[in-house]
Each structure stands twice: as structure tokens, then as C-alpha cells.
Image (cartoon, rainbow, N blue to C red; front, side, top):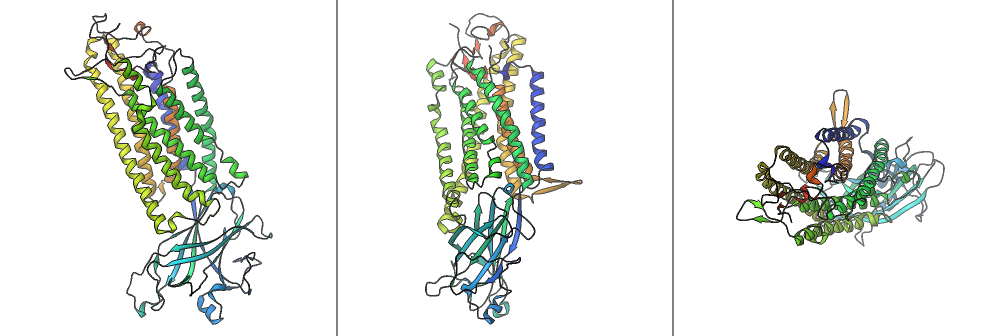
Length: 562
């Protein structure tokens, strides 16, 4: 056997494979842009002001804002003052979803954002650093006649960040502050049809609870959940891609094990990349439709973290294993690598300086995720953004992660540049070869460079589409069709990674095809003068040797044959 498929497959067949993969990539984007709806839907709610007339507040009593058993409501707090209703007896009630609608397990998650409508009063202004103490309960039921079942209850604090844009004068009393949105609740599954939120703002002047928070007029909530139509498209993609990657991975490793040598590091890393891609592909989310598994969001984050850590590590090792080691200073050509060099190149420990920071960063992000979504498994109202320390810590994580991503991409570009420069150094030896042999190795160099450029393009596309999804309105109008850009981003990038992993395992699988008789032993390419002269250029690695899987992999310079 001689080299990998990327080296021995004919150019015509490689072009056909590339076109097929490109068509699948275009289809992945079109599925999200033209077939799937927007990934998420936001629904706005205005809390109803219910009056709790019981002398002793019962924890099991739930207040419905509408329907046959709706609560006694007031429209304004002026009405409450006229009726001598205390603030502690007012309950803000929100029913999710809106009337005549139902929630569905296809929605996957539910994120709720809170906003206070606070009016300006000269003698009741918002203090600096004011904290709103919220007594909140969440209940559920699956029909319109059953009693509500408590799902969670908590006392939470949220810092008010409000700005009054006009002069604080008596003439401007009644105008509203501009307040930031506050994170309120996140549920990792939507296993019930109806949800009910009861919110109290208890007042205790002696303990300074809810004092100095201004005159709250209303509470508004925004509920965000995943669209059921997008969920079905997403699950269908996972269901289709899982066997595709699994089959190519089994086929790839079977070819590796059929060789007479043990697998080298690059081949093991490619297998690990395939395993991580399969792990993230397995559509375990199907179970979330039938089971109320609130930990699915956290589990999804863990799977993504494992895959991206493996992908980033793969790129480092992929480039590192192809970097040339020795450079003759007296000549602009490559020196023969020693046996020790080849052994070092095939050891994972050589890359600990590059892979170590990736693993450490992934572990830090895992801890950060556990500090929020891990706690939300028991308290859906918890948010790391609720406190100053948590906000600063979260922002620090995001900023550091962004900087590290940029530095990693620049470092990856630098490694690819080094590989290109080193491989280009071999071109000085190509003219000494016969025409057929020279064309063959020029083709190998071009193929490898093209693959490296595809790798960089995949990384760049992820960054570009992420930015696009953040700065545009979420959809474009294209004739009579509406293109959902965010959906296209999710399905397109997800499809791109699967196609990339598929291509890597396919192209780097051992080939059964031979190139010329010179590949049957030693695989040393010589000049037209033949023999074992000093001009022999070892560009290849015999598959039966322990050096590596491809010819490009072993392109390390002049090697006199022994």
C-alpha cells in the first residue's frame, strides 16, 4: 500500500468528491435558511396585578391572571392605595403561554427575561446600587382543570440599572426610567403544557427590603424558547449525520488496523476527532420529547465543549506533525531527520505546551457552565449575572475566551504558514525528477496545501457567521422567500464540521492504490540520474513503516538510502 487516499486518488475522483461535499454544504445552509424557521421565538408578557386577600399567605395558593378561576385584579397601584391594599398583598401573575396556546417539549428550553416599568418620583427615586428582592414561584399543569403543582420557589435579588434621560424635576414626574433587562429564569426542558409564575415584591422598611427601588408600575417578561419547527429540522440533521460519521469512522479505523504497523499519532487523533463528532451527533435529544430531562442543556454544552476541544487540539497536532524539523543552514534545503526526531514527532507529549492551554481553557469554561446551568438544575431562577461579582466574572470569561480564540486562530495561521514554507522548500528539488514523477509530487503538494486552506476556511467561517448572526436582524428577504440567517448559521456550520471530519477521515485513510514501482519499497524518489546519490529526495513514507500515514507527512528532506 502506498500512502493515503488524498495522495493516490485520481484528480478527477477527488474533484467529484469535493463537488459532492460542496453540494452537501450548500444544502446544509439551505435547510436552515429556507426550510427551518427561526431558531427561537420571543413572547412578551405583561404581569397581571392580583390581590391576595388571605390573612396568612398560603404557599400552595396560586393566582391565575385569566380564565374561569382568575384572581381579583387591580389595574394600577393608585387603585391599590385607594382600596388600602398593601404592597405585600399584591402578586404579579404571568401565565405561560398566552391564552388558547400550549407549550411543547419540542421547544426544548425556556428562558425568561424580566423588566421593571419604574416611574420617576421626586420623593421616591431609585437609589444607587438598588436591589430588588423578588419572591417568585413557578408552577405547572398539563390541562386546564387540574391544580397547579409547584416546580420551583426562590427568593432572588436583582440589581437595578436604570437611567433617567431627562431632568429630574417635578414636571417630569411620571416619566419612566430606562432600565436594563434582567435575567430571571431558565428551564432546561419544556415538559409541561402550562406554566404559571407568581411574583411578589415584599416590602420591609426595617430590613431595607425593596426600599429605594422607585415606584414600580408594571412587570414585563419576555419568554424565549426554541421553535418546534427548527427543533425537528435539527433532530433530523443529527439523525441523518450520526450513521454517516459512524460508518466512515469504522471504515477508516478498519483500514488502519489492516496495516502491518501500529497507528501513528496523527491517525489516532483523527479517530478521536471522529469519536467526538459522533458523540455530539448522537440525537439523544429525541428522548427530551418524551422525558422531562432538565439537564439536557448542560449535557449539550458538555458535548460541544468536548468536540471543540478535540477539534482545536487536532488542528495543532495536524499542523505540527507535518512541520519539518531540520533546516540546513549552508543550503536552503532540508536535512535528513534522525530516528529520534521521528519518534518525538509521534508522541502526544510533544504537544503539551499547545494542547495544555486548550484543555485548561475548556475545563475553565466547564466550571463556568456548571456554576450557572449546574445550579439551575435545582433553582431555575439562579443567574450568575445577578451579582456584581458574577457579572464581572462572566464578562471576564467572555473577553478572555474571545482573546484566546483570536490568538489561537493567529497561531494556527502561523503554523499553516510554516508548513507551506517548509513544503515549498521541496520545490527546489523537483526539477531534478522525471516529468511524470515531478507532476505527481507537485500534485501532492497542491492537494495538501488546499486541504490546509480548507481547514483555515472552516475556522474563519465559524467566526464570520457568528458575527453575522449577532449583528443582523435574523432574516433576509430574497424575492418571495425569507432566508433565516440564524437558522442557516446553525445548520450550515454544524453541517460544515461534519463534512470536514468526514473528509479528513476519508482522505487520510490508507489507500490500496500504488503509484509506480518505486513505491513498493522504500518509496524514495530520485532524480533522473537514479541511484542512491545525495540528490535523493525522500518525500514519502511507506505505509508498512512506522513513520507516518502519508507522503506529505514524511516530507522531511534529503535522506540518503541505506
